[in-house]
Amino acid sequence: MGVIREATVAGVTMANFRAALGRGCIAVAQCASCGHQQAIPSETCFNCGSGQLTVRDHPGGGRVFSWVVNHYAFAPELVGQTPYTVLLVTLDGGSRVYGRLAADVAKPMEADMPLALDAGSTREHGYPVYRPAG
Amino acid sequence: MDRGYHGRVAIASAGMTALSQNSGRSVLALATEACRSALAAAGLDRREVDGIASFSIYNDSVPAESVAGALGIRDLSYVMDFNQGGQSPSFMVMNAAMAVHCGLAKSVLVFRALNGRSGARVGRVQTSGGGTELRYPIGLIAYPQVQALWARRYMIETGATERDLAAAAINARARATKNPRALARKPITEEDYFKSPYVAEPYRRLDCTVEVDGACAVLVTSLERARDLKLTPAVIRSSGWHSHQFDLDMGSFLLYDEMTKNFAFHMRDRLWGEAGMSPGDVDVASLYDCFTGVLISNIEAYGLSEFGGAGDFLRRQQTDTALPQINPSGGLLAEGYLHGMNIVAEAVWQVQGEAGPTQVAGCESALTCSAGALSGSALVLTRDHGRH
Image (cartoon, rainbow over the protein chains, first blue to last red):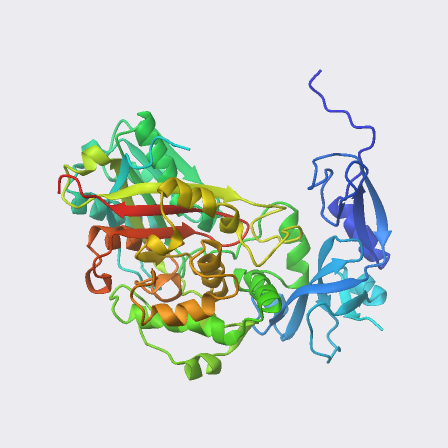
């Protein structure tokens, strides 16, 4: 009575998002109801509200949607890291994630540049680290 | 759709403290001064006020009720404290107007007060929820950074360049030369702009607002009551709040479909339709501009220019006074980041003919707005031609 019961409740939690990063990949949830994919810590689909999500490891490949080159350290722990590039990446399949461009990449970012997840650096840092694909 | 209060509720006055980078005063004292200033401008006794509303972000202000207390106001029948940051100022006015129209209150003070430079700086506090847990470890922390993602995407899709961002910064500084309240009053050239260091590329220092300490308030009441007060009422002709595609928090853009079209793009037909006006009809647009790209986004979202044309529009409106005049006070970029309440006040003063040195001659109407990404709010104000 008054309790929503879903056949399948999975979704992405911060814990399993981090666990996937530890495996060098991205946790992506796919909605069984509408097919929407999202890489967001949520037990429900942000497209249709359904709780029928299935989580899988995504290899992280995609294209850059936008980026910012950071020249100022907004926190003490970022001193010494500037300039660094933060990416907004559209993963193959359509979901988006934030990531860092690997610090040793000299190639300037270009619109829609294909990107590959650097699994080793991702495991090491605990956040998505990217390199130009190919 | 007739919302009832449009055309029947007005802003009677506005008040503001001096802006500084180190007020040395409490947020309560700043808020109280701004509210007293608004009441004095209207000639309304504090005992006539029965509603008070404010907004904050991450507990950086004081409760609205405590400001009412400091003003010596008793027996409030309406209060609102809203914790949604820059999207709030127009929405708070809109809520106050609804409260007045519904009879919850007769006269409502709406204020924003903060020590935004010397105290809790906006956006420097990690929020609850998943958004910051995803961004902060990567070094995506502050609003210049997250908003730069919108600016970059805009440049990708429209072919706009940093010259267009420069046009926003140059307009702000040029306007602010006439505004004694503004913190950044030195005019700049395009050459100056390109010498400005990058902060969060494509944003340079000159693309970013100036953080300030201060407070600002407006007085919302029925048009009928406002007509009995000192100043020409600024009639609330239309208003709206809209959220297009929110995900984890206001700085999280993991889902938003088109980062070249902010929330207002999805609200503007209703906003203008309820005003019975078109974008080109307003004399002044006092728009939210925490960063140059946000101003550009708002100019296009409200239909003041065509898609991709805001930079050119900004350059033209400085000399073509037949076009809506953008941010006569210098906006948040140059006057200071009073979190958008000050650009609402500027719109009020413009419509009332009370803007002093920044007054646009013959101003009859103004658009003002709050925020410029996932969600926000806006007002269309017109000069009353009733009893005054």
